[in-house]
Length: 66
Image (tube, rainbow, N blue to C red; front, top):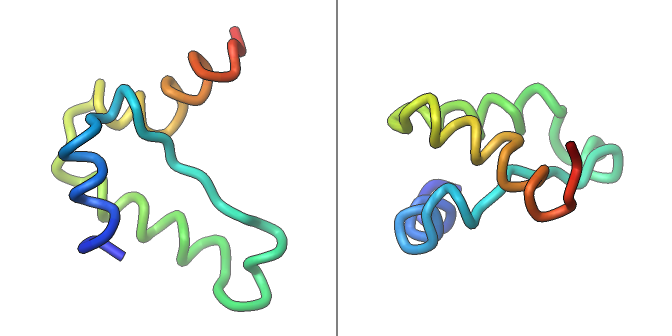
């Protein structure tokens, strides 16, 4: 997935990207643990602030959750 996801994060930045899944529908094809491990590996080179934006901050801001 990296060839598709990394360019999006590079172009739009973590402040405009968010991690999401289609669970529980996707559990028929891949376990949730595998999906989250993929996201953790993709974000491994990000700063703590960038990880915070990708995994929660952008969604909180977009959906106005606070």
